[in-house]
Length: 224
Image 1: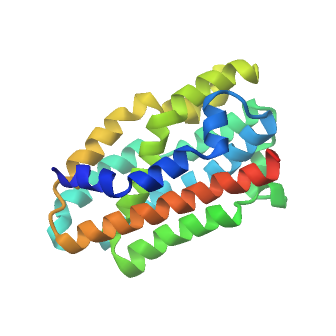
Image 2: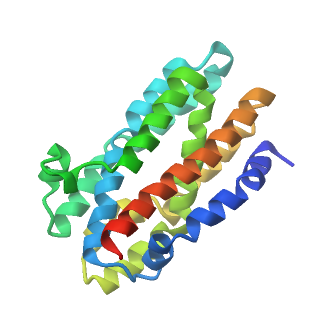
């Protein structure tokens, strides 16, 4: 069994719990409101905008033995730069005020406590604990996207009667993003240090919970 396989097996329960959340299952069926979709995009913007800074920070904190991983992070950065702008454009296409989200004009446009905590945990993991732990966040976000994003985007396009350009974030991070998962798998399998492996598993479990809390918060505010 490769370490990637061990990682998936060790976090299977947390992944299943996340994917069973009502907002995710109903979204995949196209059964959420426009308000809920915009709320999802708003929170997505407030964590996606940190992706490149987090990658840069992680690359800078890696020890010399992970020079090969630092190089790979450079490739990730090239792929991820500017994705937060896609989210803002989706918000605008939905008829909402993307500039208000960007500027956080009201509480409705701000990151939720759940979003802030996930982002803060990512920075803390990199800067205080172990930069390898950041790849637990990558597992959760990339894996969840490839599992449900494309289906959700296609279903919501129909149910909400919105154009395809309102789903650039979801569709770009869905099945088309499967190459990222393969790239991630190849990197993780090169991590052989037992302590780093344990930390990656630990952080992935926590990121599943933290990412799930973002969906739970949106559900509580828009779906009940």
